[in-house]
Length: 71
Image (cartoon, rainbow, N blue to C red; front, side, top):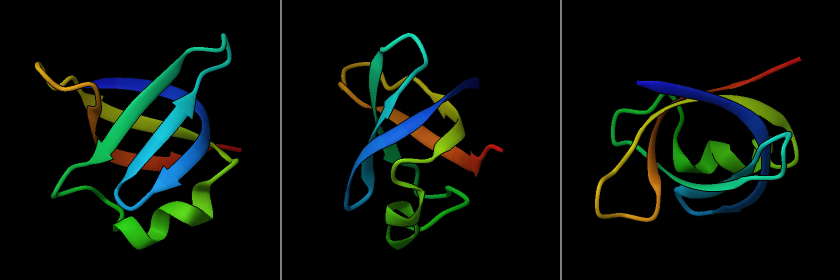
């Protein structure tokens, strides 16, 4: 599993876009067993988070398993 830190800039249902410190944008979708529910994502918008994820071959989005707000 990979980890990345960035700021959530867009949230829609169970999907979100993360902007890293170097300006790279990544798309994610919550895994079915993620530590958050889709309704929890809007509260993290515009906050810096750490995301544990796995790449999803053949998809444009990565699969997010753990999201935690960072200080």
